[in-house]
Length: 365
Image (cartoon, rainbow, N blue to C red; front, side, top):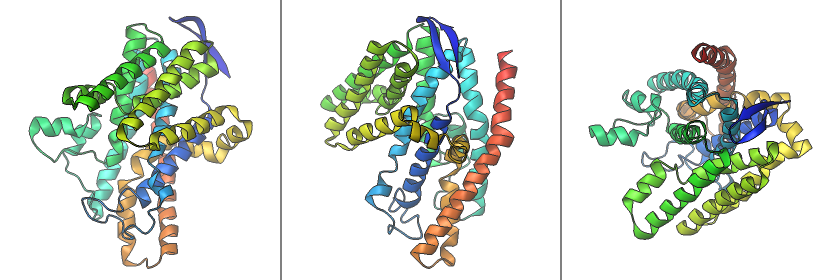
């Protein structure tokens, strides 16, 4: 179902309600990130082998699991387009976003800290990490200000929240305060950010590089842009501008890939784009992703993302004393993941969803 909502850039735009297929796609994205974090990310690190099974499960497939994050960014670009349409003002938009992010972030950070305090894990962090984590600010900012390396993310996977929040602020400000269109905002950000990123790499300009990364969220902004463009293709009639925004985002990814001398992001771009569009437009795939089992786990993907890494690695490390072979490890890892999925579902239904509704209704009044 869809509803129509008045908005500055057009007489009437279509705002879709929650899409079950996108919830299912979130579950696919988080599961691939989990595969990466459980089998490849920590196979060898500056802290030594974090996995008791060292690098024996590290393969090409598992090592590419970090591209699940890019899929999350594409989904976020799509969803933020909807959220902005539903918001009456910049303040209303920020209330909606913070009500969605912050309560679960606080709870899951405390749970993660508690588990790491009980289990002997190489990924333990200082209590000062709560300061940087709960403000959604890159710990590097605090390290530079206070000259202490104790500022970290409670869980290293939380770095993506810093990127997400910056994207929300940029888009919300440009669209709801400056009254620019969503498509022109994202296209302009991508073009300017790509230019700064390219020039910074060509002349080794630290200042330009810092601006492109800290303000324009490079090298990730283009992935959000793809989601914004697909939303406009799907629900609005701004096809030319949507095509321009999509082309700008795709070219941006390829330019950055070229400057790094790789093709990994370019290949991932086509796979992620096809998967995302298929989730929306291909009936069989949309039905599968929107099925009760897949989509109902997907709705809890935020809590699942916040809990999935450090807690699981602590539990996996605890199993080294009695697990002896690869098959037992795989069964045990699957069991750990299922436990975290169930915990995430409980948090979503008993805490995140009702608290989100309460905060939005209270603060909007």
